[in-house]
Image (cartoon, rainbow, N blue to C red; front, side):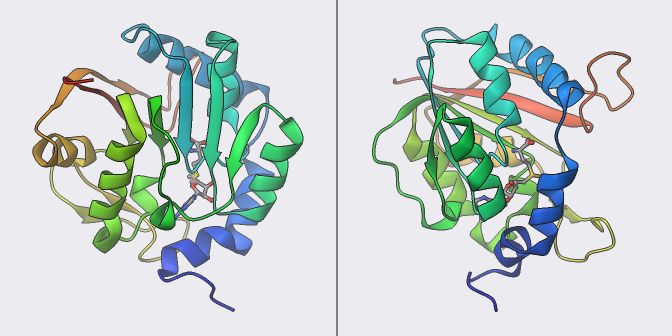
Length: 208
Ligand SMILES: C[S@@+](CC[C@H](N)C(=O)[O-])C[C@H]1O[C@@H](n2cnc3c(N)ncnc32)[C@H](O)[C@@H]1O
């Protein structure tokens, strides 16, 4: 039975999301994430609170915990199996819900979204941009598949589930006090620390 408003939310809350949880884990992914966030966090300062939108089982947050051991971590996650794992880890405040209904209880220094905007229904994107912005005290990190123009591509044999575009550029257009601190790319053929061809953007509120 469909519980959520968009087909993309139901997809991630359901069987596909459960299988993703089973498939995406392990020491190599964690190592790649530590290298990835070590570079990005290099361009930040005073990050004490972190929240990830669509955290899955927490492999990004776990990497960040290695790099910023004192930081307070939070996660928003729609898939119940992933939520169970986040809870059993015990290091993270979990919001077991859809991003599309999230409203922040307090702002965090570093707001992260990685590999999730690409799976949001394009008609709901402005809602997500707004809540990312509202949740951030200072930094927003967007790590997604980039394309200069919006395009849809098949995702593991599914249609309507993967969209690439210039997410960070759209946020910079929407929120005039955001500045681009740094951006970069991580290649799937990196010898030591691959990512899935992710382009990352670190944005900062100029008026924080
Ligand atoms: C491709 S995975 C990426 C996971 C993680 N961010 C990473 O980089 O490894 C997408 C994640 O976002 C979650 N997700 C997708 N749509 C969501 C929504 N509307 N609200 C909350 N979580 C969502 C999925 O359940 C899944 O855990």
